[in-house]
Image (cartoon, rainbow over all chains, first blue to last red; front, side, top):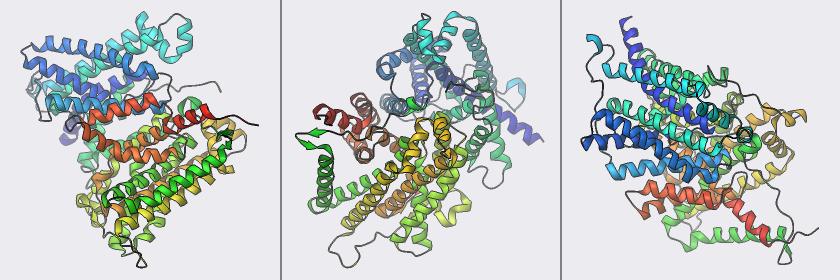
Length: 292
Length: 338
């Protein structure tokens, strides 16, 4: 029983990482209607920027805010320069562009900061929370930040004009344009926000998994999985999905004998496919109804 | 959604170019390409022949993917899994069954057809990006499954399986690289001819109708589920045969040759070749093989960035792939008769 509890808590802690990433994935999906395969690499690059700032002696929270701002700008710039020219292209073309972006960012980060593992400090410290051994202060802080981010995004999308305009631009670009919304800039804004959320995720994840150019590969995959389980249209669902995937991954690794540990990733992915088959739009996603 | 998701395939343009009908030009082009393909093994070094063999094999795999994505509108980022399945079927048959490599091609095709058909059934419930993700999961899981302990006696685990490279049969005066090249070329010719006929047939029109408008297709009496699963099976068959050929050509299989990087490579090859174009897959095969090498040549440290930039430039230059560009150029010079 103690083992179960321990594994669930450990799962929640890793789930926090996935939830962060899933939130960034859902964020950009809402703004541009595509899954950004380069999202993880963007977050990784942001984290390197934060690390570089810290190396230069900038205090942690200043570096934190500065990194978010830089990432936001970078996201907007990427959208304006790379993706605006092809915004009418088919989905497949977009996916290839994401792959190209992935390769460029990954390679550039390796070139600038090389492939050795770097450690990033945690703002919350790594001591156990309240003296118990189950969950560390950093894990708790990460989960808290994710939840705060979720609430902020919820408020932004529900209760501000810009948030409403962004949702309109994503849901129905033509009607949104007729209503006077500058759809192109809303998309750029979505990219910026996704990059910013991603940078927060990266900075929170880095103390746990260590910083190196390939750190995001499997995390992004779990993040996608979490986003899909929760429903790509629902930020809350994505966070829930993140925790669920983390717990399931841990429990499968511990309690399924023989193949559990080796096939942890496969089992997690299998569960996602199973969820999708039962509920094609995710647990909390809206079904998209289109006119025939 | 569907008409936006996949570029439309135009029927071959009719008309004349320099007074000769396009149909004749097309035959001339095929004959010319074939002549070049037959001449390559006698004019080039062994390593280049080997590379061209791999390019043909990738082209077959991309053709399989194209039947699924280009003609039936189902995404897959997981075809490396079927490629791996074909390769391992071949390797295990040769290693543990002691069978000749020529038996492994049809066997790999059948195994992958069944696997693809079965995977196609749950895939019916998924569309667009969700299907892409589910297939991507398959691609990521495959190397882990191949490495796993229960399968190790068969797959050789992380070590993989080493196969003996076959020599030319009947005492033909060819070395094994040349022979494997001709074998791949022959298999490719058969598979391409089958694909052209399939796409032009009643079945092919049903596949395309499902891509363009599933509801209208089912209203016309097409069994959408059956055709979609069958297309998945046929697509996996092509990719599996390519995988078996690849295993024989490289004479080695290991789990880490079949990661999602391969799946993404095939997908990129599909898009730069031209979605929904059969000859475009040849360009795709060449791209998958040569562009990473070219990128490495440009800069060792920034090879990934060079690859990404080349990819971006290609997408800007030819948004609908090499096939789309050719169609555009031919369209400029063609006089539309009739």
